[in-house]
Image (cartoon, rainbow, N blue to C red; front, side, top):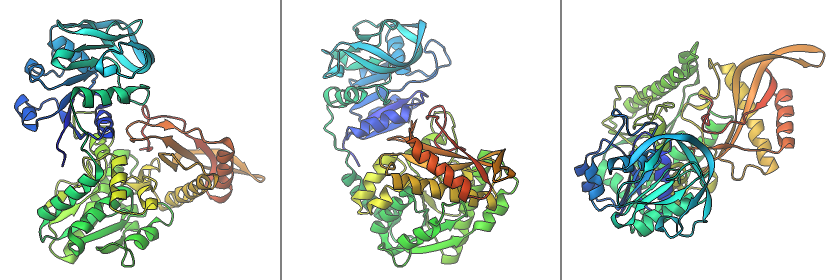
Amino acid sequence: MAKEMVIVLDFGGQYNQLIARRVRECNVYCEVLPYTKTLDEIKALNPKGIIFTGGPNSVYDETSPHYEKAIFELGIPILGICYGSQLMAYTLGGEVATAPVSEYGHTDVEVDTTSVLFHDVADTTVCWMSHTDYIKEVPEGFHITAHTPVCPVAAMECAEKKLYATQFHPEVMHTKEGMKMLHNFVYDVCGCVGDWKMDSFVETTIKSLREKIGDGKVLCALSGGVDSSVAAVLLSKAIGKQLTCVFVDHGLLRKNEGDEVEAVFGPDGPYELNFIRVNAQQRYYDKLKGVTEPEAKRKIIGEEFIRVFEEEAKKIGSVDFLVQGTIYPDVIESGLGKSAVIKSHHNVGGLPDVVDFKEIIEPLRMLFKDEVRKAGLELGIPEYLVYRQPFPGPGLGIRIIGEVTEEKVKIVQEADYIYREEIAKAGVDKGLGQYFAALTNMRSVGVMGDFRTYDYAIALRAVNTSDFMTAEATQLPWEVLAKVTNRIVNEVKGVNRVMYDCTGKPPATIEFE
């Protein structure tokens, strides 16, 4: 797939996958591996560079994740970030201790611009700090290349051995010149040329899918979202009519969405594939009756999703492979790596133990959302599909707090439709990462006409994000929010209050459940 690779060794930090995405933005392929990978396994991959992630632990705690000292003797460039910087210092004979003053948030950092890592970076630059420990003494052979008033070693390096470390996080958007630093590391330190491009990914993936599947039959989970759409078109290009796409309308879709998906991928559409629509709305409502716990809802929706597929597979005969549009953030947030479990997704964590297929194929598993979109454009998928609003696998099931009922689904469908319509009319949809309406479980007193009401509250959400790993709440114009609110309370039966969610990610997730 790629001729060169940078490895991110995961020590449990919340931004571990974001580092990989930033490296890929530099057109350098990057994968995240657990710190349990052996030295021999790492050497076998022949990486151009290695990045140690942050993490919540203290390096001087014996139970914390460590790595053998020999990794620093391989001659492979290494960049340690936050915990990774402390681990490098500690392992090589430096001293790490509890900081007299913890640093968290935007911080002015003074850097040594003669360092290759800080080439073309301002003498004083804003960086994102998040630490309670600090490097008290650098190892022999290292010198300090950045500091703050309370952090004497904000960065250090041993250029001779190509070892670099930053106490701050260059990968987050809050570090103003972080991308320059990462670019400097992968190109000027690691010597990468940047051969990670979507055209080569698409070409290689189609070829490998064709070889893997042979003359086998394939069943694809098609939701109509960008992830499953790109996966479906990849398979269509690879194997044509050997592919059957099953679209499960579980009754938890946005307004009119089922018909829109059928119009694009059905028999009158431009793609060579077999399309089946399964109307399973009542089946899902019955299964979800009385269920309020978010993870339980996700598991039910995920398991039922697979069961429907099994039934369809039996109808069409022998099926060898199941294709899903799983992407990297799904894998990350489902806790399949070393990071903490935030939530499971129906196409990752929600899979039942027994699946009646030979193998599951996830051609987009290693891609971030922006890379999926690039792949979609490379495949010739229309822009309106590629840039369609993201929609979670469990659908409105996780945008309805508490029990899911047919009545609640209709309420949130109508409210969401109004919200998206007004956002588009106002022309403020450009650049938004995601925006939608959710139904809270709160009911409150209101007045409509001369009558007292006791109805639901709708929560509106809009975020700016480039990677869906972090996000900031969008400051929508008040006149737009006022118009949306007025329409929802007047046009959607059962709603008498509208709220706007101002929370970023972290601490919140983008979805409500």
